Length: 262
Figure 1: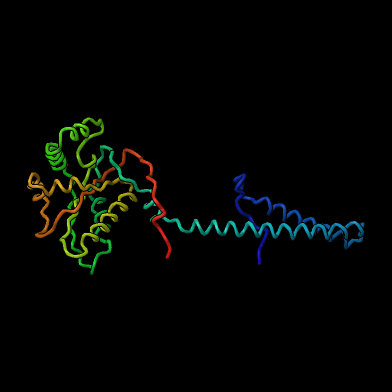
Figure 2: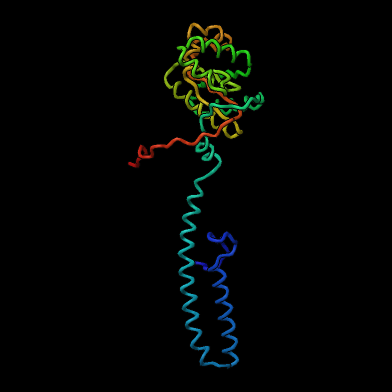
């Protein structure tokens, strides 16, 4: 059974009362008055003509309102596929400009915990994370990496007024290493996504870096790599720069045609 008379937001006016609901209430009141008059035998002929018309109008109103109900139910269903996790996924962006503001270590640790709670093959957990928030380490590695770059690339980076370091100006770094064994590269990817989504949920920005990770594993940066004290046999896969965003980049278009039902 469809209940036509209900209070719902009026999408055109923004008022809480639906126009059809008020109209329906008026018709009910009209029928009620007509019935009383009819019982009093006052102008019975006119009332007997009005009642069928009013009843027909009421029936039409009911059908129209039921149609609206279905549309709103479909809209409510679509809204049901939104939640904080989905919002975090759709809102996250790669951030390359950060505020000059340190990130609390307890928060960085919590984000890393989210990372290692990612799914992984056979629950082997063959990954390690090093959180670097030491400015001297970051600046020293950055200078060394700049020296190794072709001059035109390093000059283009340092000429940017917002440039702080080669880690996309991040205030803290998550350095992720795995023990190469079967599915661990996939595990590393899952861990990294957890870190970036968790950081976003706390109002932080991130940027996943491959070139800095490659340089860190080069002979020129051996001293910096050794200082991270990864376990024997573990190899750095990427670095995630992190900090409080100083930009709000727009989302890049996504090709939804790659999604298909079979």
